Length: 110
Length: 113
Image (cartoon, rainbow over all chains, first blue to last red; front, side, top):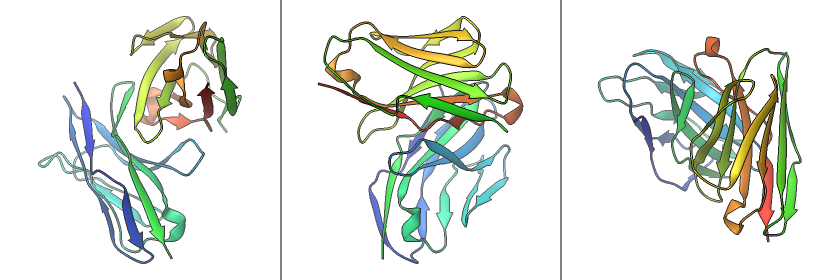
């Protein structure tokens, strides 16, 4: 079945550092890929998405590129802020079901 | 615009007591509806999903059940809670036209003592 593997956390960075959170997937067919973010005590929000190979999703300074050859969708940000502290989930959809990774806790210190 | 409401936000229940969490969606018709559970420090586990009224698919065998009495209403229930039912429960909705993107409620934190 479909699965998503995320880089294990927690990740702790200083403000303005470069961020990479790795995500690889296994799926039949051609899934759409997503990054969701969960701020403390809240539900999940869509951060960005890509629906086909080589698409780049971007939002709030975050980027991720759909790499079919490496089955990856790594999340990057050039300069993180304290307000980016949250849990980040990589996910894929095939049909009406969304499969999530385990989540990566990011803490950004001032 | 579409909105999703989930309640109660916080619940503390004794072992063996019943549970009812409710979720409603506004501003869309015939959505797919989902219940997820997030245990402390862990990822999201899909519990139930529904593609229409009265149509419920269960992903994990357990003492929880779900019902969809109306198009935009999704209820998570239990007759007798277990300690292991503690967690953060998230309702979500989607429509196929959005390429599978889910929209989540604010969550309900359940503590079973």
